[in-house]
Length: 174
Length: 292
Image (tube, each protein chain N blue to C red):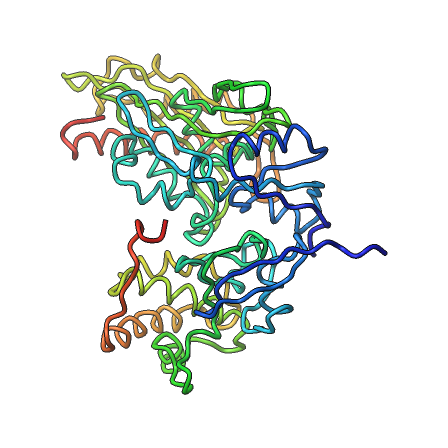
């Protein structure tokens, strides 16, 4: 069998410049898990429906299973591993999910955490409708969603109690 | 599953992209990939080459002028939704965009990509058809404009040639006094519509309806545009006979059954939704004061 050609891709992972060598067909979700060992990003349906693999690409939530790693050249990627502080202090979203019991088996949780993180960065005081709309693209088979929506609201509260984070504007992102 | 191996190309310009499409055998354009990558993950699509246009700055433009809103091929759904001038100029674009999948998908999927994908349940296919819009396609042989009526030829089939690249979609502004709305029914929020309808109606200074059309998705292999003027022209909004609209629309549609809905149910939805959409359009006009 011939060896598949690879591409060198330089991107930022959780704030750290990183270079990986991947075949063109490597999905970003698999590159994170296989090349980078960041197995917090889960792979469920692999066709963009379940939301488990959601990561932030230049601060916007996207499906890492619907993106080739090679197409992430130059992008800034944030995964669930980047949420907690270096000393292990939980991110407000993680703390809120813990407090509100917003998870059971935990398989879908990384996707929910990243989706919720993006939501409260963009809408620091989300309405019920914004919360529902944001997480509608993430499937959870355990919780029944009530505790998750409560957790997202709680996360916004906890985050508001912290030093405000500077949120890039749409213009700055593009 | 994982995609079949392919060769990845990242052209630095549209000219380079169309040259690649001309030279390469079995190449596909990759923009946002929100429809193409799932197909590749399932190995239902296995192109030998992908030409990634998502980074081309020259395709990342939204232009609003006196005639139309023109959207470049690298513009995502979210970027269009966030473009206040474009969605204020053609509110139907914003309304349809809000119904497309979830924000996470809209953050990467592109407007032109969903048109080129020609999914018969794609909301934007109905908007392009209803507004008599077009896409601009470029190849090494030149540039041509393809009107919506000629672009969509079947389910996931467009009249684009393999070596052509859609560089923009043009949505003409409806005449002043036109009101619009989009309504759809999906099993779950963000799912493909079981049936959807976009309407446009002209309303004169006295409040009477004029030319009125509706475009339907998920009821045929391409978007279906029906002229409803004969049913409503000359009437005041309160005089619209929804039963008559229902009968006319259901008589002209021949959807198929699948696991999501029977043909009869889709036809019924089309008949009901067209009345709802027209009602919304006219109510919006009343609220806004000056209908567009």
